[in-house]
Image (tube, rainbow, N blue to C red; front, top):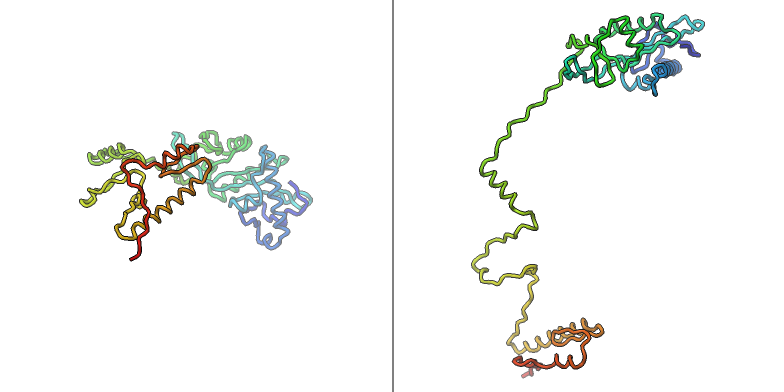
Length: 326
């Protein structure tokens, strides 16, 4: 893959190793223009790889490499394009925490080194560049190809692994990763760890007789406000007092008018009667409503009103007199 700038100025080695810092060598970090060209190379390679694998989005880019802390191996041919060089391909790897199934169907938790993206330019394939790049990564990471996991490998990558590393028997997984039988042979090398078994449920202890009685009592008692009101026991002095009616609070009990035997009692009584009568007259100011002796009647004629004025037998007639001063 050719670019309009000099590849040899960005990548001084045939195979360059890049991490999240995006620095190929010390000279690249000092020149912002080379840093921008390096990001352009990675983005173009990621788009070409996604197109070759028929993916909807690129898996590799400069921004993703900075945020995901993966490593990228880039292979170049420095003699192409009139000495400016060309990029042959790249290989991206990184550690992933995975939950896998071994050959016996046991769940295993592991964090192996994974092949995340692998691409060689179409016009340079089957020239040994892919094998050269892959072998360099294995030596640099000191890992065997059978102890690695492969993220969504294409049919070309599976054929590549079968041809050069004899990896044919893979263990089916529920995720998109592919592992082979060699992956589970030496578990210490790939840092495997079995998931802890589920703790068995403890023995259910029966309730004691006292606890059972309390539970039954709670179940029989209806919830508030359907539960009967339990008032405290009355004292000896309050047992003789008449009980209050339901819905009538003690503070709002009807007041009893006590007639005093003092000389001013008649004046106070007449004054209270006048106030009560005035209040009744105001409340009975509506049309067709007549009030007589605490009785109300609507649409009452004059004859019926006269009956109300009659004094009932056995009741004393009200006397209104003012006390005389001595």
